[in-house]
Amino acid sequence: MPSKLVTLVLRKNKFRLGIQTALGSCYQLQKLDISLNGFVGPFLSSWLSLPSIKYLDIAGNKLTGLLYKNMTCNSELAFVNLSSNLLSGDFPTCLKRDSNSRVVLYSGNCLVNEDQKQHPSYLCHNEALAVRIPPPSEEKHRRTYGKHVVASSAVGGIVGAIAVVGLAFMAAKKFYSEHTTKTPQTR
Image (tube, rainbow, N blue to C red):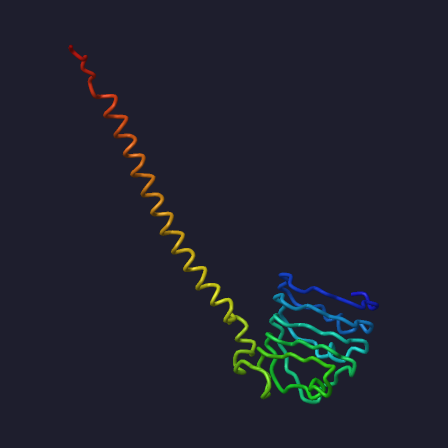
């Protein structure tokens, strides 16, 4: 990993492996956005205190780790999104909003706090990694998809039945037209 890296944006890909620990030594890194992937493994708390970091977004992964109240953060960190991971422990004091200039999001973890919605702590232990909790929006999509499948199947069945009846009618008409004897007309 180049040590002079300033910006790394890997947002909304389908990465599923762990994160390089070398990212913790990119001292010129100002923006790190690895959100909305499937990264697994430990959250490197050193990311919060990188000397140049101003923007950190790790939301929507499966990063684990124990956070502590007394962790250190870069004072110039303006945006932090830790949401929807498997982080547990105490919410770091250094991330609490001292001013209106810092945005901090952390819902969907197992952190001890009163501010944003958190999962029960047992869901963030390593044993829970084998279980996937679908977000409510995905569950709604799944139900809507099921209704579409049923409706499409019903329409397909009706169209198929009409086609079979139409073919049978055409076959019968052809059969009767070929086998009827034409009688000559008498005057």
